[in-house]
Image (cartoon, rainbow, N blue to C red; front, side, top):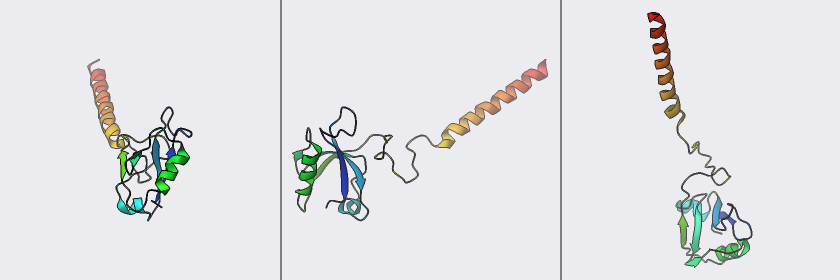
Length: 124
């Protein structure tokens, strides 16, 4: 096989109102994993030039099974992680802001507010 699983299709929409085909899992040591270019969450637009738009899931699976040895995929990268198994990378990345980017400015503002409050009380 090609070393990855797919989800989606006209009969099994993975994302509401979107019948596209998505990579749900890349198998360790499979062809896609060893190649390194495909990522979980990528939308697959075409296989060997054949458009996947408006295909039922089983038909898309058959296209992959019959793709042959040299396979060309046209994909679209996901723009941001989704709240789903596909969006979970499992490598420690949350996909959001680092905690320090929130805490440091927040602590600085809190320290400034305490300093201002203490200075204000001294004048009274």
